[in-house]
Length: 281
Image (cartoon, rainbow, N blue to C red; front, side, top):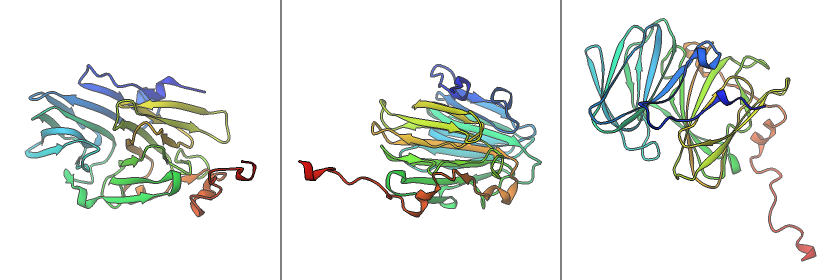
C-alpha cells in the first residue's frame, strides 16, 4: 500500500520548499518545514503554543528572538555539523539571510519550561551505530540530555549502499513502544542519488515503500521504518520527532521488529563470501 501524502516532494521555486502540519499529516503534535531564502530576504514565525527548533542546512543568516540575535552559518550538511536554535512558546523569531540560506524549522506543543538556547556541535552526541551493511553515523542534535519538552532531533549519515534504521524499529504506541511522530528529510551528495524508505506494520495490512531523492520528505505515521542508500550516493537525513514523551523521558528507546533484531548480536551473520560454488568452476 502506498500513500503519496506520506511522501512529499520539494517545491524548488518557493521559499517554503516542503512542509507538514498536524492537520495535513493526520497526527497530533509535530509540524515541520524547509525554508530557502535569498540574500537579504526575511522569514518570520510566531511560536504561539509550540516550542520550535531551527536547524541550518546551508548558508548564513541572523536570527532574532525578542532582544537576542544569533548568527548562524553552515557550509552544507555534508561539510560540517549543525547548530540548533531552540525557541520556546510565545516568542517571535525572524530570520534574515546574509547569503542564500536554507533551514529546517519544526515544533510541537509545549508549556514553556526552557529558555531560548543555541546548541553547539560540541554539546551533541555523535554515535557510530550498527555494522556491516548497516553502519551509519547518528548525531543527536536535540536529544536527551539536551533539554526540550517534546522535540527530538537527529542528523544521520548513511554511506552509499548501506542501511539505516536497522533493525527496523517503531515508536507508534503499538507493541509497547512510545508514541512519537517523525519526519525524514532526505539529502544526497550526488544529483543522481536516491534511496529507499519503507513504513510497515506486522499486525495489520500497512506497507508503504518510497523511492526517495534529494529534498524529499517522508512522514512516519506508524509502523517500523528502515531506509537504505543505493550505491548511487551517500545519504543524509534529518529527523524531527515529537509525541507523548516529555523532558528526560525523550530518551526512551523504540521497539525493534522481533523477527529482525537478531542482527544486533552479529552485524555480518550469514553474509555470503564470494565467489560461491567455487568447486564447480
